[in-house]
Image (cartoon, rainbow, N blue to C red; front, side, top):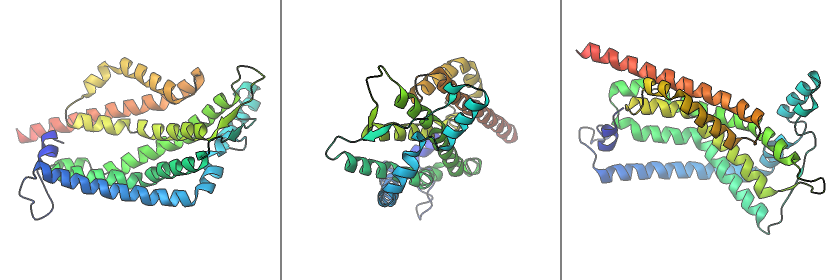
Length: 285
């Protein structure tokens, strides 16, 4: 993919297919893509807004209860290896609201975030439609499936965050005590903010291979560069894992593993791009 091609708009599907698009035409084109994305998010948000009770009770609050699947698995492991400390969320904490408009603002926040998550496949598709006209035919073929894989990685990240990081986080912060005199009653906005941040953050982080792929495609990074700075990248991934997980070593290592795998997948993709580039140069020679 060529950066110059994206900026100058080499191709266009309409009657102007043989002409270059001006900068203002690009802005107009981008504006309509953003309008359609906004409309999709709003429709998704309305769906979530209507079904907020189910989403709150059965999805967002579920990880803090002992019956949640992740909590049951950790409980089984704790019992199997006779290690009670491995059990998580055995005593669910209460959630309170002390702001006048707290529950309503939380309702709106959940609706918007849910609308974004529901619309993710369409959002990726719209961005692909914006970039696609600037690609050569070969580049389009190589990028086939970009929307599918981007969506798949994002949803995988969301599931990873929801089923693993969120239960660990709720256990750590919900059971943490500085004194037996202090009872944890978590504020509604604080809980929802933490859960949604973890879920969305995990989805974004899992896009790492796609980011590396496109950076390698435009020649900003190479497999050699990624290998040379592998140790530095691992340290950054460990820091990232420490940010999005509870402050304990076990959770950090548990989350950093998939991140390292994603980084190595990016290295493999970059190497594949370089091989194809060399093959094309040999054919053209």
